[in-house]
Structures are given as structure tokens and as C-alpha cells.
Image 1: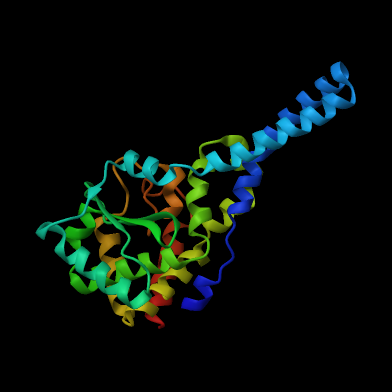
Image 2: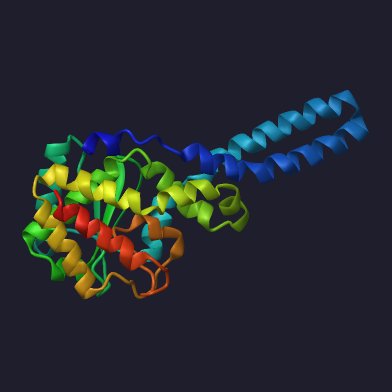
Length: 258
């Protein structure tokens, strides 16, 4: 199952292409006006300007998303004795996976949840809530951190990160609809759960962690729907989505069968 997660094809192009559509449309309008005024020279200039605008838009579309997400959460860097368990587990799994230790941040929130954001496995950040650290024992926390590393190795993490910015633009979101559907699918969560326990070799750890998270509650005080797909469990208000409970039960059942 780890291989399946790692080989999932990236879908960053879906979101970048959707973001370029408005720029291309505007460029075509400008080009048409230039053709009317300047003739063939206007066509050349219009296409050149449109090409440059698309290049700059594509480069800037994904810039600074990680910092933007972390800033919105108010998370602080995990360090010192207070977060020794988290740091030690991340270092151990980093050696197992052959992936550099990611950025580790803690968000002050009583909910028990975890998110991963990043453009590559080498440039990723794990955010855990204070409620998660308080609720889980070491074995359960290892299961959650293992799932985070599986999500870092998942081929669609860059696309999932880009989707945060796309979600904040109604036009881009509608144009990239299929990409959002895939990222929010229950099958993706099940795949990541299984890939995570493939790293820790102990399915009961993540199973117990998810059960405890459900008991404590995974809903954040100020959830942002644009980042919901990056979290281990739905961070939104309870009952906000039909079928969310059933999807969570499927995840638990899948872990029990391993």
C-alpha cells in the first residue's frame, strides 16, 4: 500500500491550468484589441504579453502557500522538552522513510487533529494540535506521525497544497472541480491510513489514535474549509457534511482488517 500511495500521480497541473484560464481569456481580449489597432504587429505583441502574463501567474500561484497556511493557524514551532515525543518520533520515522525531518508545528486548539502541507517531501510541514498531543499516548502518536509521513510521500501532496489557494477563488475552484473531488475522497484517507501503518508496522496504533481523536473531537475552533483536505480528519463543525461519520467508520473498519 505504501507504493500505491507514493505512485499516485501529481495533479498540480490541474490547479495551475485552472488558475491560468482567466489570464488567458484576458490576454485574448487584449490581443484582439491590439490587432485592431496595430494589425499583425498587434497579434505578435498580444501573444507575447499573454505568454509572459501566464508564466508569471503560474510562478506566483503557488508561492508562499505554506507560510500563508501556517500564519492562518497561528501554529508555533515544536521544540524543547514540551514536544520531545513528537520530535523523537519524527526523527525516527524520517530515518525509516529516507525523508528529511519536516517542519514540526503545534497549534493551540483543544481538538485532536493533524495536518500536512508542503510542495515536496523535502519541503513539508506537519502541524498537530495541542489537543492531539494531550490526548494520545506515544504509540498512538507514532501512528499519527506515520500517517503524516505517508501523506508527505503521497504523490498528490503538492496538488493538495496548491488546492488551498485554488479553493479561495470561486472561479478557479469551479474550473478545477474534479481535482477537488479526488482530494476530498474517502478512498484517499483510507489509502493514507494504510500507507501510514505500513511505515509503523502497527495498525492498532493508528486505529486507537483515530478512535481517541473522535472521542476528543476533531473540529477546530476556527476551521478553514480551504485547508480541510490537508487534515487527518474533518476539521469542520460536527454534522456539517452528510456521510462524514460513515466515511470515518470505513477508515476504522479498514484498519481493523489489517
